[in-house]
Length: 158
Image (cartoon, rainbow, N blue to C red):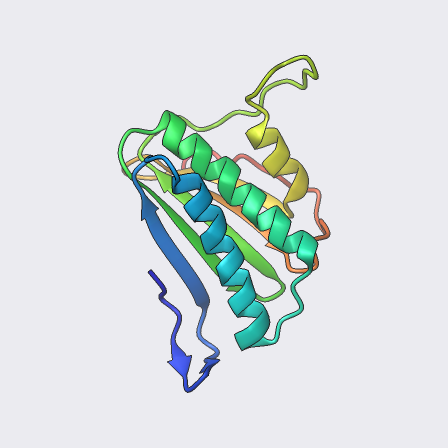
């Protein structure tokens, strides 16, 4: 589950990442949030990186929303990967559904189906690419927890 390289008690300069596969079972979304929380705690401790409490909350929210959509709309397993990239965490979710998500028109009266809108509002960037089987969604969250970019493209097939 943890692909990070270690040198003694400190992580080396190679990419710091974790990943896990989920089957859409009860508790998977909570396990995904816990993986995000533990990963960022490790980034704080082992890397000495300044990770704001807001960033921890936002990464957990993004994992929760993207994994919920994967479990709800895609048959089969999904994969969640978190990677430290300079001053941000990249959250990537792969699933087997080839249909690209489309943000719904803003409607405060709508119940549910706001996850993609939320992800796009809190992230520095958001991309979706078709893959040979399914799609890959990637969102970037700054370690300070503040959004530094307003670009949130939904990319077409890669």
